Length: 89
Image 1 (spheres, rainbow, N blue to C red):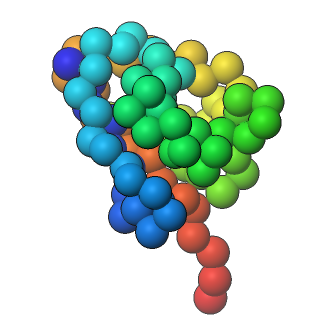
Image 2: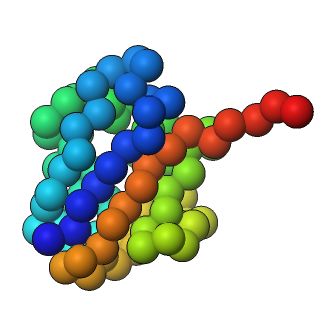
């Protein structure tokens, strides 16, 4: 089953459960996490349901650049990492 994990930056604001899900797309995996903690949705997605500009998703070690449909396919052994992009110098 794909595993969805959130990095510690998001834990400062709300509970970020690691989710093992049968989801076959990124959107379905995110929805599984939001079902466990609905507040998490507002930190990850905007009002239109798109990834917020400061959120980055990696699927199996590769950055997912599609931010609207979130239809990237997941494999049974996929690891998804959701993180807030950090800036600074």
